[in-house]
Image (cartoon, rainbow, N blue to C red; front, side, top):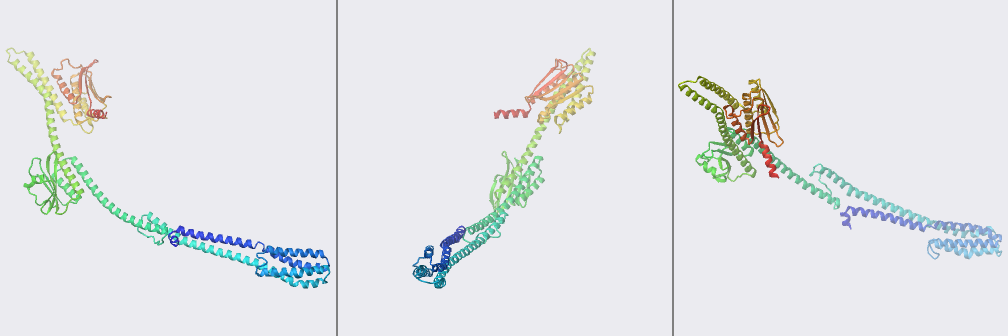
Length: 616
């Protein structure tokens, strides 16, 4: 029982409440019992008091000789004496003082007073009122004593009731005070501490103001639990703070590494890396990765020794030139003397460009992150060298392609013109060697030679202009507008109109070059051979994503014998159309003039069609 009271606030408070209720109930029951016992005390006092008054009446009635009135009063006194006994808390045989006084009054009444009164009333005994009153004085005194006894009994009951109520009140006050004291000490103060600690925990203070509650009840268990929880959370927070600090440091290093790789990748995309600049990148990488001794050996795929050896720190002290092939072939971790070596090959597509070596003291090794960073740096250097080599190869291929284009352009234009001129010179030589020189024929040949020279010179200027053309930031539309402006300046009598609607079409450089050359060739033919005064150029995209190019003039129209020398440019346009997988059509217009039509599907549309087809 005591253990339960000590270990449970609820049981403790419940016990106090139960005691308070029991005291209150006891007080109520006692009050009820006492009040119930004192219910007839007042009536008994009144009845006893009335006996004294009736005794005085009898003392006045009996000497008058009225027997009936005397008998009636005597009967009434007897009834009231019996009534007093019936409402009393004792019986006539009890040994209480009130019971003894009552028996004395009854005996005195029945044996002395009543016979005396009857004798006086009947005349057997003569006694006046004064004498009778004097004789009744002892009896009246006994009645007064009986009244006083009843009054004393009533006052004792009232005193007992007052005492019970005061005792109950005191017990209730004590219990209430004890309850309030226990609530204050066991509930209010601990709750204040718990509330304050909870607010402190809510603000993140897990290790300050520990709860000092040593009780064994629920709040004590809760306080110890909160203290334990706070200690655990504080320890967890410290661990998390250390982990966050470590992760932040790692993230910072990762950010630095990513920033380094981004800047290196951007630099690689901008152009080739020279040895001096690559050495600076190696130095920055060593500082970023916390590595001291790094060697970067760069080799040609067919070389035996490095053409560039970059060292950061002391490097690998035992590095010898004759060991280069062995160093490259033994990539990975190895122990050599007092050093622990890591080698990372610079290799792509089975082509070796060198090796990246990291030298560490014996017993020390690289962590996973450092290994990954070294491998990534080696891959970046390899990519830079491979990109440089590929760009050099692309430049060589582009140079050869450009020379092939120049050769084709010269062959298709100047070579044919020169061949034609050579034929005319042969004709002129035969005409001069004949016995009779036909002057008109010689004159015709000379005229054709002159026209051929003029045409060759014009073609040479067109080729020079074509070779100097460059598609700049303005794209195909800008270079077409510049070309048309040049034609307008050279031939102000001809109106050249451009209708361009390919601003939203992503053309490749290859497509732009061939479109430009095809439009220029067709426009040039219209300007020089159509004999018209208007040329219309339109470039639009059809609904099927194909591009439609039209060059129309209002001249004399294309000749029925296009094999003549002035129409050799058509073969060039046919070749450009085939390079774009397009269809070229050259025809006379019904309203006069020539129309060149070219249709092709650009690369982006063909690729999108393939993607849709594969998805379907």
